[in-house]
Amino acid sequence: MESLEFVFILHLMIKLLGKTNELSQCLQRKDQCIVLAVSLIGITLRKLQNIRENGWDQLLKDTKDFCVNNNIILPNMDDTIPARGHSRGVVVKW
Image (cartoon, rainbow, N blue to C red; front, top):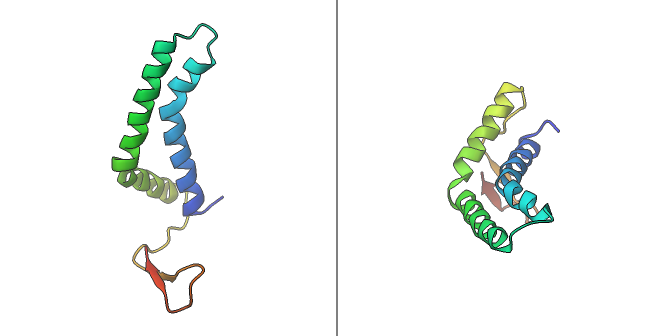
């Protein structure tokens, strides 16, 4: 639980769940208006697309800041690592 990958996934989940919460609440109401629900679906899809297109830098920054504040070791992003499932000659740069 003290790894960059774990913290990154948690931050991603928080961000995604935060964007879908209003839609989720609307869909759980018994007296929901179908027009409002459909409208919220469109809004939620646009929010998620915005995260997909523009949210990665901020998400990575938030993750790194959390790791630094909580003394979680950050890997050197400039290192090359062997690619999983490939021969040792194949390397991947972070």
